[in-house]
Length: 226
Image (cartoon, rainbow, N blue to C red; front, side, top):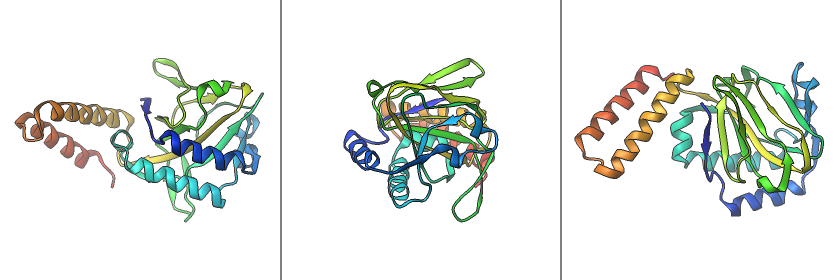
């Protein structure tokens, strides 16, 4: 399930992020690549756990906590600290799958269920650089407006195609969801979306809205690993 999340950052926040990142020191992305990814990765990243990375990453997490679409789609249990990358001309990240388990700064293990790319460059700032994700329905392409984010299963093979002009700047991170199974998460997301639509049409006191809310929360009780 690929889910676009609009306006994670407004345009003023995007500008604040870009002003800071455009002045930052970038390092070779291969320094954080695994044994397989290192052979297909050519980009730049901000040093993990640097002061800038922590500051901007915390702001991203704060904004996400206030975004109802994100909370409904991800049902996050743990969020890996957001990181930042940059692809300039001829840089790319070939076809790969993200690591199944990552370790948080406190060495706590985290299963990666959902991957996220938050775009910080407008589409007209660069050519190429599309995020291509393999799904059961074929390849899906994401190249969103600055401030928008795409969520996709961490089990997916995906790549960032070579940038041919300009520069692509993004924030990226992973989540462990309270609901591990992606199909169950999709059903919950669809159900919650319907509840929100009916609530706006009928009101929160409507009997059918309450019945669907009852079903939604009890499904989470059944499926969630809290």
